[in-house]
Image (cartoon, rainbow, N blue to C red; front, side, top):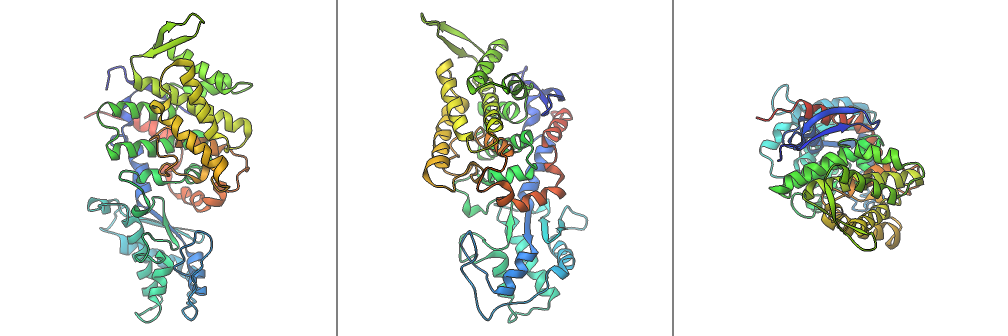
Length: 445
């Protein structure tokens, strides 16, 4: 890190949350708020007990289709009043999961939804994230068996199938129990687990707050870069600057670009604003001017220029979605922002060109190929969006917060349970402020 790598974080009203913060204070390994967000995501599972009860009553368990259940087993139906005993089940699940008295195991009941957080200490011997599925599922199945006195010939295998689906006959659980992280066998490639959370889920976790969605998505993306080794050496500064400016409104850049160009402005005006600010802050300089008057620029700090360009990309995505009142156009907005930025400056676009390439495929798959491909249904781990690690999905999440119900698959449809979960998970409330406060309190050791 360089000595002048300090930032000021602003909220979505342009108000200062933390001044003169060293960039290293945003390191996912060192910022306490980021650590708490990531830890909460790693250890949270949830199950709708009403759905579980209905699956057992009808014998519809072990299905593999995303919509409905094609697998019904006549004669193996079980009429267990799970909802009537939901609190007893929750207490027993908590006891089974607890490693030591007073640890941070949590089992909370929200109407029919049971939210389970396995103890943090579980990760001391973990080799992957499968335990966030398998431990709650085992505890839940055992609790039901104990409370309802089920023996080996009384249908306990149906309970297991209702909770976990056909796993381990299938490569991943597909029953009533879910988690914020995807099951490891569903994630393509190492170090991608944090990138497997759907855009709509991120929107739901922050209750549709635009700057909070940008922050949470950026945290997940750049944490994945640290986990996979992509943020090593000079790339650590590159990713931390990206997190700061695009995800956390560092130096109020995103907010000011929207203020100055939000009404009556266009993406080209935002690009002009980025260039003017980069020139003013001496991030870029004119390399030479052509006879036509066209200017070519250069930079001596590629990481900081990328951060400025990424902040502009976020502003363009928010502006486009706000004007449309729809998130559908965000891939196109990102595509043309990057294309025009490169054309106008001669400098690399966001993520050294990877954001442009990623946006091109993202735009194609959300507009042309199939009707179900809406921006909110993708995750950063999808083959169409994984090309840029850190700089595309935060913009998509922010844009989807501004969608006014124009999608076939809005967050309320795909992520209704996630909206409920956030009510008891303080880590996802005001993430920008929480991260800024933790950064202010940061002391390098």
